Structures are given as C-alpha cells and as structure tokens.
Length: 488
Image (cartoon, rainbow, N blue to C red; front, side):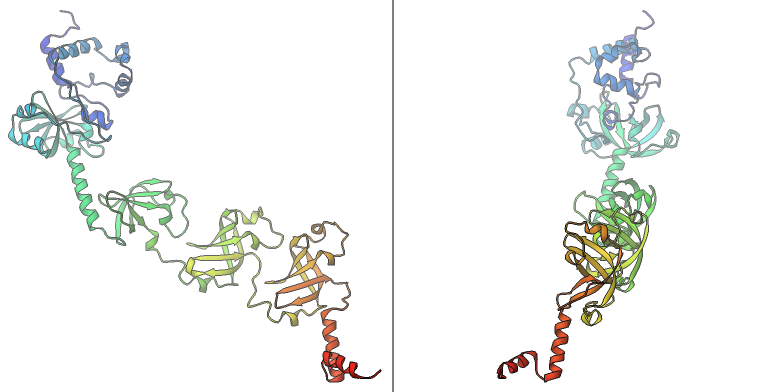
C-alpha cells in the first residue's frame, strides 16, 4: 500500500472527523472550522472554501491544500458507504443565526439519552460541559453524548479565550444529530439569543412614552446613533441630540458612552424606539421675546445659507432668519461678512414665540411707528439726507431713517432720457434731497432734488387757503360764492 493511500478504517475516521454538514458555520459566515478530530493543518482556509463554492474546478488546483490526494480518497470512501442516503438540506435562514435541522423520527430514536431526545423534540435547551477545544470550536459532553459547539456559536459576540470555558457547564441548543445519534452539533449562542429576545420583550412592555431611560451607544451613523436600552434598541436621531444644531452624531457622542434620553416614540412590534436627549434640556425659546425684543439689537453666528437668506444662531438652540431683503444697503449676498462661521450684528425685526421663529435685519429697526406725525416732521420742501436703498426702472428708494423710505422718481433726477440710474444713484450712496410730497395715510414720501424749486405744491395750496380764511373769515368755497354774488 502506498504512502498516500488510506485504509478503510482510516476513511471511516476521516468521515467522523469531518462531517458533511456544518450548517451553523456556513450560515453565520464565520471561518469554517474543523469538528472533533480535525487538525489545524487539515482545516479548509476560508478563501479557498469560498473559491471552491463558486468554482468546483478550484478543488483540482495543486494549491488546494496539503494532503489533497489523501483527502480526496477519504471522501470517496465515505461517499461509497453513504451511497443511496440523501443528503440533509439546510433550511434557509438569516445570516448570523444558528439553524436547527430537525431529525427524522428514526434518527431521533437512535439518540441514546431520553433527556436529550426530549430536548431535541421540543427544541429546548440542554445542559452540557466543555471538556476541550480545537481550532474550530469546543468539545461538549451532553448527558454522556459527544457534542461540538462551533467557536462562532459560543457567544453572541466574540468568544473568550477557550481555557476560560473548560469544565464549565452551560445550556446549549441542539442543532443537528449526527453519527446515528452519537454526535451532536450544539449552540450556546442560540440559547443566549432566545434569552435576550425574552428579556427585550419584557423590557419593551415596561417602557412608557415620555419615560426617561439610560442606555449605551452601540454605533454612530450619519443620521444619528443606535442605543442599547438593556436588550431593546433605540434610535437617537441627530436632530434630537441637542437643542443646538449637530451635523454628525460623532461630534457629541462616542461608542460605548452611557447616555440618558427621553422616549418620544414607542412603536409596537419590533420597530425601534425613538429617543431624544434634547427633550431633557431647557427650552431655549422660553421667554425669547424678553431676551430678543422686536427692534432690539442682536449678535450671532452665521450657521448656513439658504436660497432665501441666512440662518444665524443667536444662542444655543435659537436661530433666526436673515432674509436677503434685509441686508444693509449696498451689501451683496457674496459678502465675506456673511460667510458661515462669521459673527454679525443687526436688529430683530419680528418675534414669533409660538412658532419659534425670529426675523432678523442688518438695518436699524424703528422704535414705534415711524409714520406717525410724518407730515409734521417732514413737511414739503424739507431738506433731507438719505441712503440709496434700492434701484428700480422708475426711480430710487431712499432710506431717510429706520422704517421710513421715500421715492425719488426717475423723472425728478434730472438725468438724460435712457441714462443708467445706478451709475448716479448707486445702492448705499448718501444723497441730499428735499421732500416734494407726503401722504401719511398711504405711507408715501415723494422726493426731489434739493436744488429744485417747488411750485404749485400742496403746501402752497394749503397756505393760500389758510390766508384766505384769515382775510375773509370764510372758507375757500364760501369766499368764491360770495364773489359770484357781488355785481360787477
């Protein structure tokens, strides 16, 4: 007999050492391990196993592994003895679970222990003692029957050092029956998984909406953090971490950190619970009108730009909107002063405490109603100074004082027809003009050049009426009628 040939009894031992099925290992995606009796040298590397699964021709390659020829003959001998016996199919399941392959009544009857048979039939846990280990997993004595627990099925996470399990007894779930009932493939992780699921169900029943809970951060994502509440997983959205804006959860949280949060959504079933840390912080909008009254000044940090303006943080958790129409006269949208992170100062235009909104401006806001008594403050002919606020085809709007704007019509500018108004009256330019007309009811002030002489204005008419009343003691209409009555 040559060196590479295997005697029949050796082939039988090889079959026992390497069972045809390793359902728990294949399904959970762990490194394939050997069963009791398989040496480290004979274990199939995962890369080669994957290649063999996709391309059977790989098995024929010279680099398929050591002692390939002897292993091939051993498998051939085992196949001859098991010819005619159908191969058990593993049920489909989710990756990461230990799958149970139910034995046939004949196979179950061959199990030599009644306790083990009952546990298999009812899919109940059974006690086993760790008596050794190899590269792939642990040898387990289960009521006098030899068992094997793959390394990846010992814990829900990474297993401890093998020596720490020696001579220790644990509960296991029997996954498969092999070797005519004299060998079991078991999993401790399956028992731990069931215990955790039961604990999670009980914990979920005890939780209530609005309750404050403690948990440990499991992982961080772009949209928030997953938190372990003691067997139940909750989601802490990035918008619920703080009152102030948080771009990414890792700016505030760390994996493994203990946190306290409030339950803001408690769905039924297995859906994740929604948590909020900011709900435990004081509401920064409480009393906002007292801290930032309309017309008052503010200083804040530019946070971000939108198509209609800039959001400015006045204090943690409080942001206001600076609309593009409320920039200082002559200021453009690409001004470096409006870059994200810059500090700006301005005035509060409006406070809406009910909706947590603030409207901001970079131009001074009036105190009270600026149009009250405007006709007395700015009678026709009054010389004024103002700032060009906006240019239109029909004229220029001139800011006279906070909240009070007048119009200088193009026809009053003294420019040639078709001339570019903006070249003479650029936004932000200081100009000297005079009041041509005031309409307090319609909130309109018409302006003209300071050098222009006003003729036949409303003020002239009012002066005439006043003078006529003093001279005749009659009104203008009565005075006219009186003249008509007098003979020529």
